Image (cartoon, rainbow, N blue to C red; front, side, top):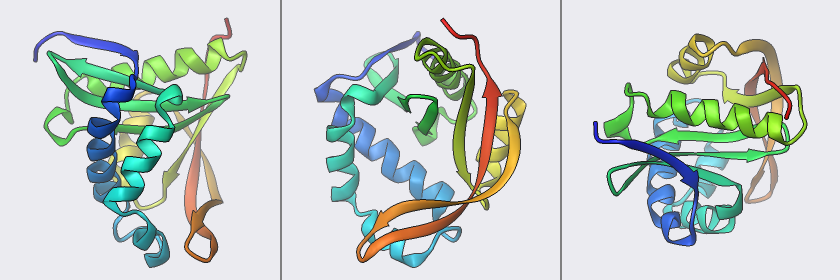
Length: 162
């Protein structure tokens, strides 16, 4: 793998982020979330959301290619996705460590994230990285006709505050 750099996202990264987000979301969520949520997760929805969330996004770049991204808000690591060709490399671990750093920089001692209960690959990764499964909770996310309830696991990890 070429050199790996982590930096804040720029508006021109949004298209690559949208593709990685859509592909990764489908890999980890299809069959594990309600059909109503799948219906609203269209390619256009990922494009719009990626463009709207540039300020919350950090990207990992390998060579000139966006290889993955994280989105952090406050104490929550909201999104962690890596392009399929970079899964199993250091990209996800580097991005997660950066997200943990940002949560600490935001003044929080504990980071948290939600994982769809059926996403075993993600759960194993977070556990290898020292995150603890705190149990099930009902995550509410926007759907076509109001909120959609998605069974998730809450993972937490102590981080250093800046």
